Amino acid sequence: GGAADALRAGLPFTLTRGQGQVLGDVSADIARDRPMNRLLQGEVGSGKTVVALLAMLQAHDNGRQSALLAPTEVLAAQHARTITAQLADAGVDVGVTLLTGSMTANAKRKAMLDIVTGESGIVVGTHALLSEGVEFFDLGLVVIDEQHRFGVRQRDRLRDRAREGFTPHVLVMTATPIPRTLAMTVFGDLDVSALTEIPAERAEITTVVVPGAQKPHWEERAWERIREEVEAGNRAFIVSPRILGEGESVEDNFDLARRKLPGVAVGFVHGQMSSEEKTAAMADFAEGRTDVLVATTVVEVGVNIPEATVMMIRRAESYGVSQLHQLRGRVGRGDRPGLCFLCTDTAPGTPERERLEAIAATNDGFVLADIDVRVRKHGDVLGEDQSGLSGGLGLLDLGNDREIIERARRDAAILAAEDPDLARALTRDITEEEAGYLDRA
Image 1 (cartoon, helix red, strand yellow):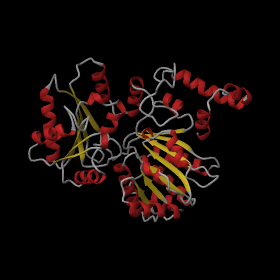
Image 2 (spheres, rainbow, N blue to C red):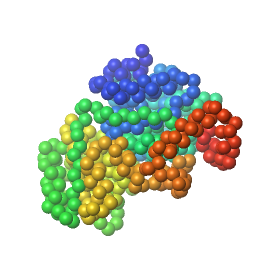
Image 3 (tube, rainbow, N blue to C red):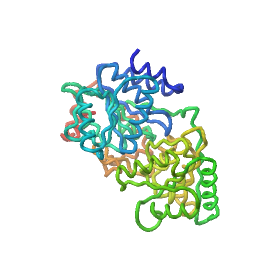
Image 4 (cartoon, helix red, strand yellow):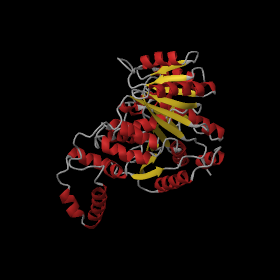
């Protein structure tokens, strides 16, 4: 057995049945001649990272490097720490290197040397991995965390860093469950695996809509609950929709939290702080020097603090469905139950309020994904814009046209297999740019 077997034997927990199945799929993909193209979607806290690590160790056992691309420096640094600790605990000797844009020139040079010489078996980084001058010794697997933050072209830019004539395997991960129709349309080039099981040790999250305008005493009670959690030794997030400006900014809510929670240590973090300031603020919260952290959505992805049990999201109607689901996944990550307050001044019966009520009614991200696909746009399929679709799907409605999409996908596969000349004739008007995307996929 190699590094992958050694880690699996040394894990302090048992993998869920779903994790075992996905690992089986990934192992079979990696063993084949053609490169793996797999999307792994899993609930917040379903254990995607350990699956990715075991896949990276399988690549290492085959003599190749892996790169893990994360959307933020906070998440990249956390991944590097977690992976290094898990390998050390299991006695597995594989070099892990972190590369981010804010590192000093000397630290970057050292990291890039470790990557190009093969000293580093696992490389973790942000967009810095896509920079000019970053060369790999022998890249065999690309893992992309929170793939909705990256476009197809960015995925390909990293993939192109492999040795001449070799195409690395790709595993893209998301904690934003994707409806089947959207997965088939946007990720038609990928095999899809889903982790729907939450590990037994994860606690349940309760979500409550707090209508401040109609029931101000509910909001007062929410603040009391935050104090009770802190007094019990737990920690809390207060999420603000903006950094600066009038109303519900980080600054406003930092002052509000200090007024509502006298004697409680309150900190703050947002995207305009320097990397060092963000790291220090997160470390203070993680280590208990601050009990309450006022933040923007910089904490939406990947932040893992088991002592955090309660979150208050201010002006909750200003966030998307999947964003709210991601945010509340930051609490209840240990064995203590989580509590999430969705504060809103929306009126009962409005679409915004009904959306919040739907989120509060379920922790099932796949149910929420079907709600989400009806209320927002779906990301530019071929480009780096993931925020919304500028007419790219024409008359297709991803929320309601599931049967048509499934039928079209089946028919296209049959046509390509049985009459390739006709398939080619039907696709002659595809532009060079679109053809390039399809070739890369």
